[in-house]
Length: 84
Image (cartoon, rainbow, N blue to C red):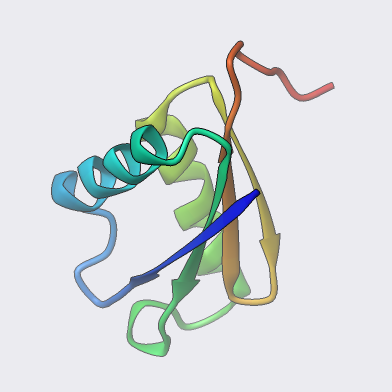
């Protein structure tokens, strides 16, 4: 499994940021992306959870996420997954 990393800064989630994540996932099919939310982009952990929900909404149903500290882990699956 490949672990890719990127940073989310003060500009937040832009269309270019989403395109970059999709491009990286297409290049490495079985990859997990670690998105480090920088201090300039957040004030509390609630901001990180808000970014997580926004990312999943923009990326689509095939992506799942998990928040650990100030890091968001993203993974793409072949089929859409729903939270139970």
